[in-house]
Length: 303
Ligand SMILES: *Cc1c(COP(=O)(O)O)cnc(C)c1O
Image 1 (spheres, rainbow, N blue to C red):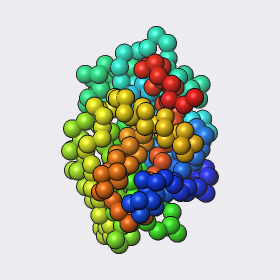
Image 2 (image 1 turned 90 degrees about the horizontal axis):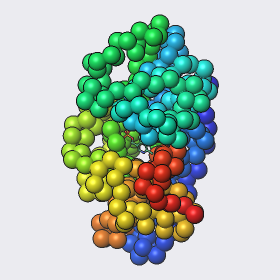
Image 3 (image 1 turned 180 degrees about the vertical axis):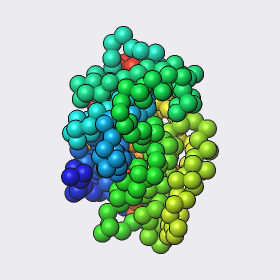
């Protein structure tokens, strides 16, 4: 019931840069998992929804920013699996809902808007009890789906029958990365590109996510150099890169996550950091956020 689309394509990318360095680069199209609940956000919801159903919860309550992929995915999953959803949204109530929240509302999600200062301490926030009291048995999922259920779902991203040396992906909370690390075989490693500034806290967070796993076969590392100014920030190089990548490979990257990670990876390959390797890049999805990003920055990524 909870598997939406188990056959995810893996495509090889070809370019002169890759062949000079003898790098084989494949992209796992987890963005194609589902048209509305795309990529890693579905992976993270899978066991959470299963738990909510098993506990006979009447609603899922979760958290996110106004453009959040997790909010969009939770709302759509709630509609599909017939469970109420409530989003606690960071920031003042918007007069006009942005495209992400409009779609979430159409999927049946209700919202509470909380000031950024209250939001810091989510579970203790002022008014949180009132939010929970609207429901009989609410099931709480942390921001971005970052709990053990989420990590477990992400361990299913890596296909069993595909070999690679290095796996590359974008990191927000690091939950997806932890799931992928837990699924590695001996000799394999994962490189994560955090999209937040000052993301060295992720080393500890990922270690904490990995605690429940007793034997890890692979290794992992983070490269903190490609956040482009911070979460949802942009610069001209990133925008040009995403446009060119689309023209060249006919493949859309999102500007918040996958665009930064692919930009970082190809830049490091250009600098000669990876040679003679077979690399698997995870396209974690996030394409729903493109409209909101284009509105905010008055840019067009794909024409
Ligand atoms: C949320 C998200 C990520 C980051 O996932 P974490 O598990 O929080 O690190 C990466 N890519 C996309 C497209 C996302 O929506």
